[in-house]
Length: 279
Image (cartoon, rainbow, N blue to C red):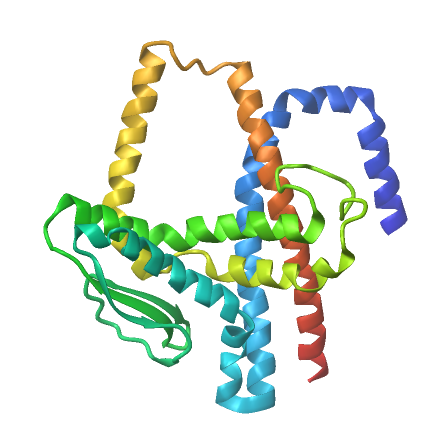
């Protein structure tokens, strides 16, 4: 059955008529692939966490539910440090860190005053937090809140780009069939993929973070919409084939990066699922 499907797929790819039919839709497929791969990776990461939690619970009981946290400790640390770095950048505007927690695990506080950025777990545990104070009611305070809230996403993407280069010798926007650049040390693959997975598992801002960033993100979206409408109205920005191909080229590199991460997630998920069945 698998051989038959492979033969059919190869025949479809080699069919010039079919290739010509797909060609006009190729840019849209690449762009939509970004969203599809992102959703698939979020679902895979959630399923992987569920498997790890089940393995931990069967081996160590309630304490085993913390295995996922300790596996992703580097990502949690980076997450909190990104929050703290932005708060330090806004120190001239009256921002001041009052508390940083990286490793202490305690019950998650449901009430969230401004200035507390937390990383939690479904088991209502707080894995880390950055608390700070800042002058209330100022525009710069809302900007600082928003940037600090989304800082783990920005810092995590930067870390992934760097670690991908460390692991393979290629920049993440270089689409290559070779896994490693010729002559690049192979031992980087012993630790870099693990760090990439822990960072991607923890880079997404929490619900508390998104609430802290809502004013900044709303303002940026409005400004971006006004700017795009103005550029389109003045014919500076033209929605033509060239623009579509440019966006599709960027989407191709994002698709490649997300696909590589998804493959890593699936490999670990298969191992975790096998262990879960054996236990």
